[in-house]
Image 1 (tube, rainbow, N blue to C red):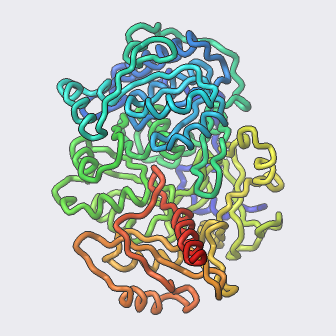
Image 2: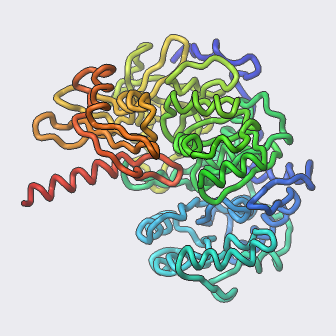
Image 3: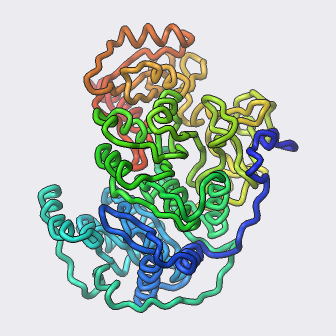
Length: 563
């Protein structure tokens, strides 16, 4: 694209081009420690760590990894919820020159074995309750050492004494691991390892910082190779977009999981880069989150639509003060306009939609937080980022307003897929990274996602975008969550089905929903089937798993045909 019409709508505080420091990611923490050693870096369930404590703990972890034989480029897996240990280990692994492999704690044994074998990780840091899962798969992988920690390790007194009993009641078992052989205790490492800096040669352009596996919502998870340059660039862009925020004076809410690239960049890395405080919760619980916001007064709250929906629908939301929140960037899924408007009314802050992928570290587009915004748009490309719309399956750039595949270029775009050169080649066209999302750009340079290329429903020859139907459904106040999918249909090929979760205490009939849809959608787009559910299947970051629902429908159909 020869012109970038979005630049005319950039806030004057945001330059079109940024210069990026050619430093490793862990240098963020070194600088934060040097500038503000006694400032609180992490608040976790009543426990606080300063930047000097975080820095020294990360160096101890790095030195211990080195004593285990970890060398530059080796992979170290972290399988933890948000916690001080997850931050310590992340920076510690990088201080050791290792490549971090973020691992979802919800993984089954099969998923865990696949990721460990594919990444070739030598060491894994795991939560104590997940330790048995690791022991069952370790022989099928390259893992040599297992480091074990627990939530209690960073709880204040007396919570640290009580928590093991709560954990045993919750999970039905407790785990005891000895600090010997291939098993290591995180608490022992923090007691014994030296906090000294490790030197190794560094290449800003080429060195991997992270192997971040795709969510697997569209197939087998692939290891996305993100370099130090990729992450440095995206965090710098994020900080620039938040130009009204004052470094060192903000508090960032950390509910988004750090094992997902979105939480890792917009909460953990941004907090350390800006020397702010992060408030961590190990899992999302609406009431706990409301109490934490009320007490800790976070100013920035990166999230996903499901998080904001969960808070808005809590019956006691009115009891809590959420007015500290000034800016929220929503990602991972489409942000319904109704949710945006309600959350802004409750908090008085700004909630805007952003867009990105694991392969782009992750953010490529966002709506200006304090500037021009357009309903339903994902915003505009960030500084140093170019974007266009390509004809699907071709390299032809389409004119304004035409729907095609969103393609991007920028320093945050991945190096490639780990050990998958063919997949890497297939996802680039003329240096454009192909996102797999269908969308268009308007004359002002605002982009719109109409749907995933793979999610588009083709019914009777008509193209139907689930997101368009979902936006209409969300106009009904009784609906808490919904997702639309194409299910097999012998006559139309595919047909439209809506899966709906109603707000507690509300009722709605199929007839009422159908009448609403027929008023606002062409007849071929109106769902033919509705299914009410108490919850929808989701990834850990809250993205609804449309593919899971489609597979359920196919299984039902196969059983019927078998009869």
